[in-house]
Image (cartoon, rainbow, N blue to C red; front, side):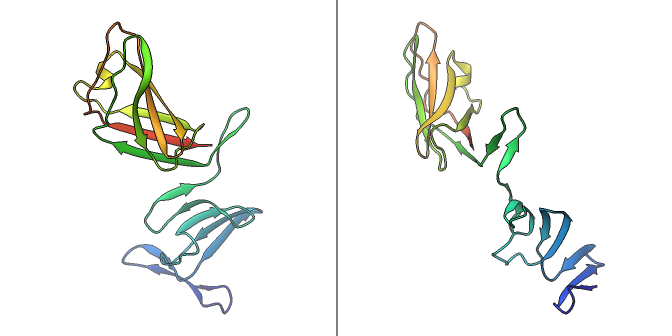
Amino acid sequence: MSFGGNSGKNLTYDLLSHWFNINSRLNINGFSGIKLAINAHPDDTNTQLLSVRNSSGQAKFYVNEHGSATMSGLTIPSSSGSTINGHYSTMTVNVASANIPAQQCASYATISLEGAQPGQTILATPLVTEGGIETSHLAWNAYSNASDFVTIRACNPSATDINTGDQQSWRIDVWAH
């Protein structure tokens, strides 16, 4: 089937793959301001394989040629509304950790994560390991006080110092607002 007049745009159905093939961009407009664009050529560097765009043509959700999905300006429903502008994540193994003195809080470890910034929402999750932080009496949280770094802070309510060793692995997730 041809569409777009004499533009050379074609939509075909492949009986072997059971796929529709489009030799150019196809825009489907549901209503004013919303556009769904499906791109036929993964080597088209100007657009994505699948994108949902706003009325200005900016991609708000898209899938790139590697299959990675990206959503920009995600608004989490709440009374005040909070927009998530990015998510960064890393897994770091054998993190060098510090001794946490009895009845004190201190920096337990610092992990490099490109994109981390002060004031972002950060979650630090240890992977279960023998002698790890999850087996001790330490409580922990995470924050960024410098660009591209996350600090894990631990508090020790016990009467003795705690040192968990350097075999702990951590998953760090950062949400940029």
